[in-house]
Image (cartoon, rainbow, N blue to C red):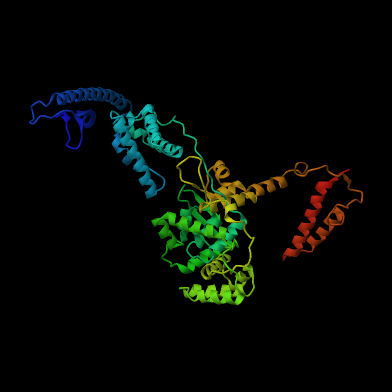
Length: 558
């Protein structure tokens, strides 16, 4: 029968055929009253009224479908006469599968594919519910597209999610327009919404050194941090670095990035080379990846890698605070040593027990943290952790005074910041990706040409690099700008005019005239042989710099 009832639904359904296709749609007319006990018999008045309304709705759909089929056949005939081919179409319910079959240069990540298919399935379901007459991709108009996005916005999605949905649908309709018989993309002229961009913060050189020091004894996460810091590669590419990508002879990594598919060339820094040599000893010739254990965990749960990196960053930033709880008593050296050694005997791991005892004895003999590090070979982070663990366990002070090597954690840049919008997750600003930002910032600040930086990072546009990745600290930014600008702008006060012929060099800090200083520098440089003497070079540079600085501040030519 054209009209149908279903046991699991309160709505009337209609079934019809048009243009060789069978359609079955929810008519959105509610079944009311009491149905008949037997087929062919009338039901209650309310039931018959709802049935009549459903029939009218179905007749309208059939009529529209037939008119559309007739119009489509005319278009098909004209198109076939002109091109020799028939116009194809894609049913809306097949949209996720059609998207999956779009030709691509590289294979999609399974998690990404699943997410995109889910979004497209949600789009189809929404259109079927609110615009049941739109049964094919070609039926989607700009007004329907806008209505869908506005309904999604009403559900509380963020502007970023709005933009992601819009870009997905715009791209999908663009790539399938021929197969779907679409003349105009209904999503083309819909503007993106403004979003709040929170960029990662780079580490300073000192912070990077502390992070590397904090993971020195962590054989799992240290290799990934070293690779990230030395290459600016993303987390996935670091975890999945292949031996085929490594050329230790030429000193280069040649990697096809997982996100963009760009092939990048990256010089191998000495620190990275040492890490790769260690990995070479730990792996077998059959291992595809440089770090197989890390690759396996990343494949299973990428967030575990991020969590371990953040733990290292937190530990590095909180080391050696020197904040002794006021409640802990200060005991005699002998009693503190006795309690400490007694606790160390309870430590389960023999290896840790031995290292902790060595560190504790060295520190209790009066040495400072840096001296303990040099004597025992333990990292600064390990020394700090061992001493604080002992102090907490024996309930008396072990760490002497306060160490001012780092500001307290609350004064350091946070690992995450709150977004302006309410109910949103905090934005991560210092995590694994920060190593990429750090590398780019240091390279550009050091004067490495942007073109070479892009060759390493794989970024296609300058705008992306400068907007999201070049983020020097304010003081460093100020210092570099001031040193690059003319002294007229960067130095306050009036310039003292001195005749270069006159012997007036009282304010010249080298104690001699500029010409004498430069002469001495030339003599020093002439004494440099093929085997470079670092001290001589340093002296020459200092003398020339003194002369130049003084000359720029005080001298004008006559």
